[in-house]
Length: 124
Image (cartoon, rainbow, N blue to C red; front, top):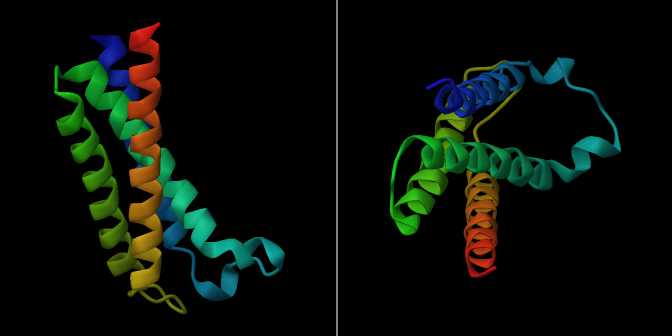
């Protein structure tokens, strides 16, 4: 039972971290070259979220791989939408459709990679 809770705890903790970082007003954000890669950061952030969802779902349910992939990528993308909505209420921040696309793209790439890795491991 404990081994099933660990992935969900990691997922909830990571989602809370995303929420906390999204709550930082724009004036408090660091400046410099790091933030020039905003869309790459978004994609990576939601790739990790989708991977954690993939892991938690795999530990808890016997799902067909396409269902697992769809739920992981779709849920991560929906969290990205909700995060952008949340940011629209944070001083100096705004919601961005391009950020949502980057979030969803990162989630889909992560799930496709994990699906491919699972297929390679099963063949071995």
